[in-house]
Amino acid sequence: MNPRRLRDAAPLAAVVAIAFAVRIAWDVYARWRPTINDDAGRYDFLARSLVDGLGYINPNGNPTMFWPPGWPFLLALIYRLSPERLVGDHQLQAALAVNAALGALTVALVYALARRAFDRTTALVAAALVALTPSLVIYAGTTLSETAFIAITLTGLWLWVEAEHRRDLLWTAAGALLIGYAALVRGQAALLPLVAVPFWFAATRDARATALRSALALALTCAVIAPWAWRNYDESGALVLISSNAGVDFYIGHSDGATGAGRKVDDLVFRYPDLPPAEAEARVNRDGFRKGLAYAVRHPLRELTLSARKLWHLYARDDEAVGWADAHGERHVFGDAERLAWRALADVYYWLLLVLAAIGAITTLRSTTSRQRVDTTGGPTRRRVPDDRRPTTDDRRPTQILLASLVVYWTLVHVAFFGDPRFHAPILPVIAIAAAAGITTLLRQGTNAPAPADPAPND
Image 1 (cartoon, rainbow, N blue to C red):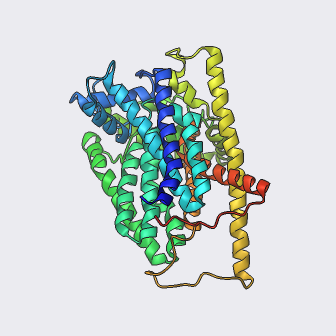
Image 2: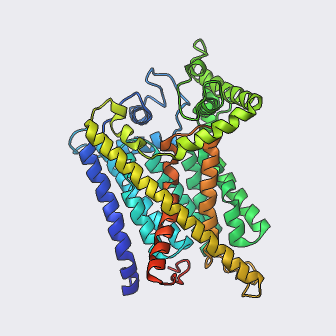
Image 3: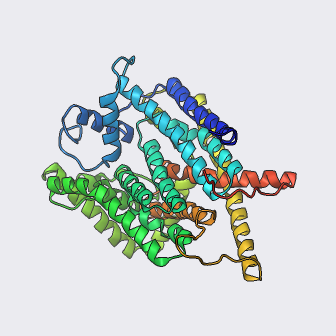
């Protein structure tokens, strides 16, 4: 590595190392342990059941489709491979160490994406923001799926961005396979090949090339999901693509007791006690969508109110991770004052990110608008060139469009279901990139320094 590249890589390496160290330090401090009564505990239970050869089952021993399988299968692999010489619960320790590594990988991926969308300084600031985001640190200290989902999804998206830089559809295909697995972790990722359509069009300026990329990505994503969908059909006799909790979640957001937030809907979940468990889950999934859609059609005005409430519950605060760290009070890890302090830290950090992200988004939009105005008033314009010479990767705009599309999609998909502070965790890296753009803009305005003219990296 030449001295220039080494100089550029050293700050990022330091931030990645800090991210890993902070997450390991949190693990030591919080001493998290799973309980069977929440999502993190169920993922742990499913993974241990797989390792023990019992299959994908509920605690009562019956096969289940309720939980997406991607993270439990990864956890099972970690548990199987974890060295038994570790002290205590060596499987759990290994899982949390892998989470810390995935959190560090996420920091590097944020840098790479921000580098394509903005510049080196903004990318490094974004990486540092993600490295120290309290909620992301805390989630990595549990067996929730957030940390793995973020890392897998960002890797797939980065491969798509790099595919345009390298003009290589094999990278697009590789990214789609990862996005497919991300969908098995959280089903929302299944539609990302469609969400990426504006990005591909901005990168290629060609409708046919855009359609080809989207079709390829969607086909490979579906190919990854298909074996699990077949397993679900074999168990229940019904089409359940990923998990049967989708219908339940939809009903939570569209029914008489809906508040915009999560809640128990035992009237739906336990309505078929006499059916075989897998068949009952499939019917509950179907009924949840049918009843939810019927309610939405009958109550259009209330749906508007619920949408606003869902947005509030999705984005208003970021302290939910603290609750998961002590199983929402079951484990009594923190004292009252300690818990309040961690919640305050998470929320204040997050609110600052939102303010800075708004500044970054506004300044980026203004910059893009001003460049377009120059193009339409006699300034230099982008010349259309053949596909093999088109300068797609030297333009930051496609990656900026991809990041903006992710925020819009992630918001809309939770308006369609229900809002919860935990659900915005996967979009925090994008918020951090926008916040980094806001920070660098403010710093440059304060010093009257021009924005650096380094577009997407060439190395």
